[in-house]
Length: 372
Image (cartoon, rainbow, N blue to C red; front, side, top):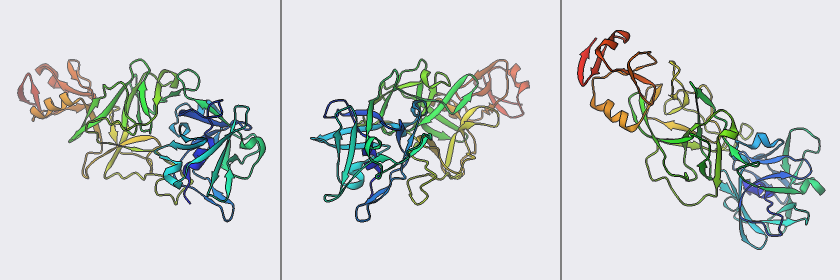
């Protein structure tokens, strides 16, 4: 029986009250202080053999390791009494096993999770009894290894912040995909979607909505390379949508330990995918990947076969102007003293005297076509 988030379930403990409040949490084991992570959406409990496949869930020490990882965020939804649906990474207990889970309070602020098939039940526990950083979810340990602490998300200590994967000049970038809504709190942070692909250019469009819907793959310009400067306020998933075209696609998982799960990893296809990276000229763009799989909780650009290997950025307005000036050649990475510097980093000659710095070609200068 599938049960990804029964493990999920496992952790959901919630407030210090007997009844747990709906919301977003991180959950850690009371005994080992390891946090729960949802790394893919498959698993099972075999009640007849009393065995459990919990490989989709891992337990890791260190809050700093959690800070930028959506796999550590779980949405708790009470469906009556002590029964809950526990959701994370685009799935949930009820989606997988068609049943809710029961959470029992110990009375000391901790909780235990009970999963049942109607006749036989299992309590979830941390299986690792040593002090190593990583543990494994299971059903055999007892006592304090079954105790789980609920920690509500906030924007001060138990916060979520991005550690950008790419630096270009003085700016930092990250693609992002998660199943909760987000509001950017860091100074200067911006989020973009990809509106269009044209030849070697992608038009990226800034999102001006204050709160970005869940399940929206985005490109985020960060404040710095520090998670504390790139905080996001998180909100539970709802039915809201962005309402605009977006060529980015999102991936939840990249779990190398679940090779038989079709959703555990997304293989990279160089014919139809581009990922965030630096071009040969050191500019930010979407490029070919050197990794065989797409990173967890990231976005990639889906492209038609035959698309250029490197795609640089323009705003939609810049791209429309580029199309109108059909003879123009944009030269990426060329240093021109008096140039138009576009969002993508393309440098286009602004005056005739600048042409000597550019390769031979056809240029639009002051609205006129000039051959060099």
